[in-house]
Amino acid sequence: MKNYIHVVIVIIIIGLLYALVLTRRVNEASRGSEKMKEIQSYIKLGSGTFI
Image 1 (cartoon, rainbow, N blue to C red):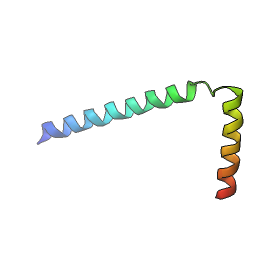
Image 2 (image 1 turned 45 degrees about the vertical axis):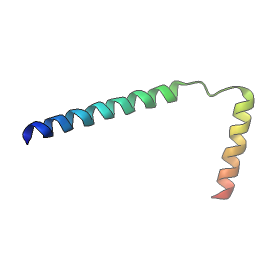
Image 3 (image 1 turned 45 degrees about the horizontal axis):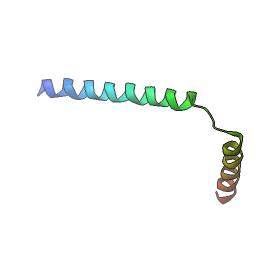
């Protein structure tokens, strides 16, 4: 039983590290072209109005 707990803990740590790597990649990615930024501002405005 104790061996399974170690395996689970290792899998959890690997999953957290993978999530951190993906978060960093997304945050470092380009925001896009000027047209994409313009569309994003409209979406943000619309979602704020909806809420």
